Image: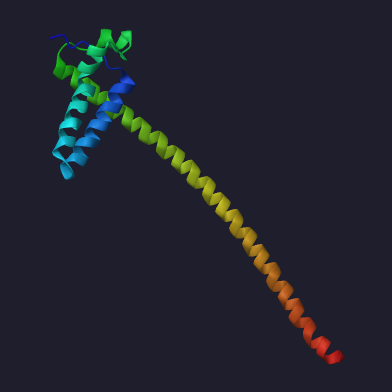
Length: 141
């Protein structure tokens, strides 16, 4: 049976991630989800989808088809390592974005806090002026 790669990199990574997710959810919910997860994970790891072959769909680039290893266990290992590498890169990018957003939020919060403190001090000073003026009003009467 010819299992030439017909699943491209993005498609493959989505299948691996989704397959793992379905297996984990299926362990707590339904055995059917575990089976579906295994099938989806396998199509991602092997870069081959039987349904794609029947439908004539091929999301693998020419370079991906040429560089894919013929040995399925080697191909699965390479694909899983590629998935792990890309997942780590994505997590690093998200972490950097989150740190940037957190810094911006902290700066905005500090600016608002300073503004509120200034407003509170101004209100307290105004209230003190009004309190100081009241006894003078009473003495004038």
